[in-house]
Image 1 (cartoon, chains in turn red, yellow):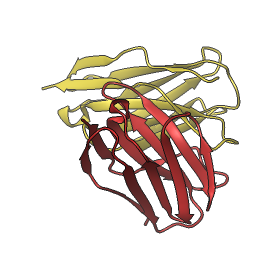
Image 2 (cartoon, helix red, strand yellow):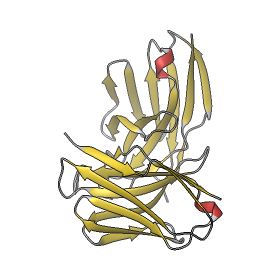
Image 3 (spheres, one colour):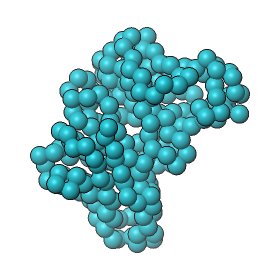
Length: 114
Length: 112
């Protein structure tokens, strides 16, 4: 069966510090991968998605970036965090390329920028 | 662009009753509507998907209907239980795209 991992689970970082969140998927190959952010009381905002190694599409211009160095690894980064980057970050995968309608989410990382 | 609206931010119902949640979407296109459950501090969990050519989909106590004329999906939980308390998210995709648009969710509270 497929599983998705995210770490860390919780992170407290000062403004201006760098960020690296990691997501890995097991039990599938060539998944579509997604990064979402969910602010308190808000909906899921799609940040990035990837259909393959090295292929990243950005949905929202911001100080975040994403990379996919391996088929089942997706990394969310920032060089300098802002207060507004606080939120709940979720990684998700879906089968590609056809059945991508259904997404499977990881446990999430709660980021607090102070 | 696609817009998804879940009309109720919160819904309280008595245990044993049927909960009905509403999801409206704009900009009709080949449509696939999904419903997810999200517990506090956890990632959403997929429940049901209904395609545009399907009127109804069932899974145990869950039922989803799809009305393309109204551009609306209804999500029902029959014989609701306190364990059903969670936030329920509606999401739309168009099949051929890699992204899904989510609504802001409805927080359901089932009162014993």
